[in-house]
Image (cartoon, rainbow, N blue to C red; front, side, top):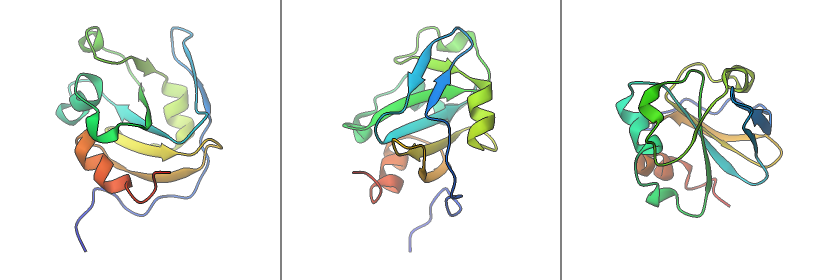
Length: 126
């Protein structure tokens, strides 16, 4: 058995709709990887500024409980949605959730890089 970055997934549902502090809406309508990031996080940078190639074909949302200017030039939008992070049961960032369209958490764990997450969720991708 190879080591992983996670404890067993806590069975639960998360909200499939989220609104960030600017009023930007996002909705989970298909299996989606939600990357919960935080400011000044090396592992998060791959999701905010890096290449998500290992996760190609999978919807990815990048969410944070707090904002920062460091994401102004990010490769993808970071939704600052502290209420959603709290409602999702994420205990701390960096963290990922693989969520189906109904909000069921299929997998979760610590977030280090797109390749690491892709390897950990490979059995859950549909």
